[in-house]
Length: 242
Image 1 (cartoon, one colour):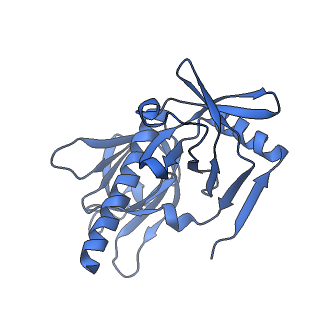
Image 2 (tube, rainbow, N blue to C red):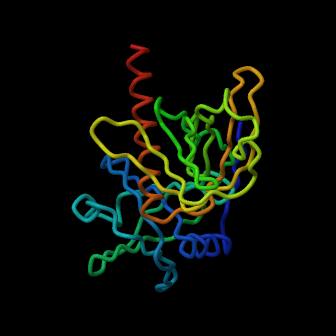
């Protein structure tokens, strides 16, 4: 069972300064209104005795959430150490379409990495370039922080292929999720090889990558896709259990 750490007091303000500076993606949820969107912390300000944070406008928020002072709002995000952080708060102000929300008293943090690693849908592929050659990986699992995949077509290939011993950084990594109706592609600016080797059972060459840089638009796309496939997995599992 994962341990939960409580962040409170002055550490709350320091945490939110980091969220603002890093442009961390947060998932905003209002359970009472069945509303969920992604957002970011844009600014902080103190008014009277309370501190508020300004969020990037989530689609449909003003139409859904007129009673900002009454309805509890839940937030969740993943920090740089892959810890799951979450908090709830209520109270705030909407001024000229700017949404200011009261800083929470406590943020809880869980270090439970497996919760946020998605078993990739069949057909998910990742592409890297090395020495002007494009390589394809069949993705096993993926999270906001990295991915595990197997090199396609390498198990019977040249054992001297440089990809089999490369411990470095790839740039412009592409991930393509399977879809007949949409172009579900995410581009990672840079990714580092964390682990590579041949699986003794399957004889496939496995690659573990850590995502180092991803711009905000691509991060939002990846986050949405991970949540989307998680929901689809849970719905399918529920049907099987009926």
